[in-house]
Image (cartoon, rainbow, N blue to C red; front, side):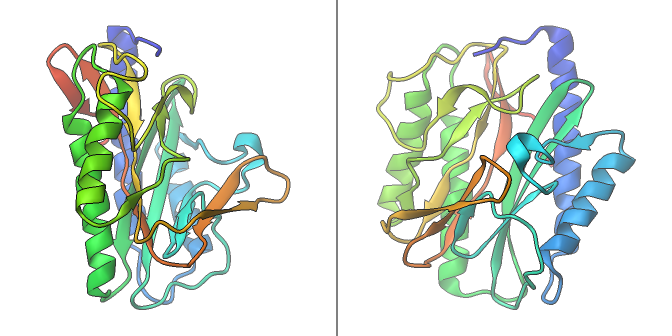
Length: 251
């Protein structure tokens, strides 16, 4: 885990604030009839207009400025001609790069009126992220986070994705440590004051296996549920302090 100086933390605060603003600016345009490509352009233009660049664009060959994961897409969905329709859910995952630092956040949004099961999996994903953040203590471990997330998701009748999770973040888009959505208390990497991580549980309706999909020209993969049931995700970038966690991408 990379520990940041006071000045680096200030820079992280700035880029994370912009990431949150970008996410919710883009979310205002979510409605039936819009394409995910249009949402990508909105994200791209807003990011550039605020003096930053989209971290995903060109990252290991990723072709777009944002990830848009609709319904049974778990993460890394690539924007394209797909038209959003009434009843869909969409996770929008935004990362901005400003003055040498990255800020990363995502949330799942409703497209018009959605089903009760869509509302339920989305709410469980949001609360799972909160549970994970609440478990952060200075000199605690990533296992503390994973345990809190996994316990809550399982008790709620859903399934936390284990293969993909959060990560350290700062000068690099993805740094150590890996932040899981499962685990045991006291296990894993130590959480050091001054460190910054993302907490981003992905919650599926069922225990069906993941399907990995290639992105042409990129080493990044995108993932879906094999039974096409719903998946939802929320993410914050969090600073670990001597007093506990501080959400940097709050809005």
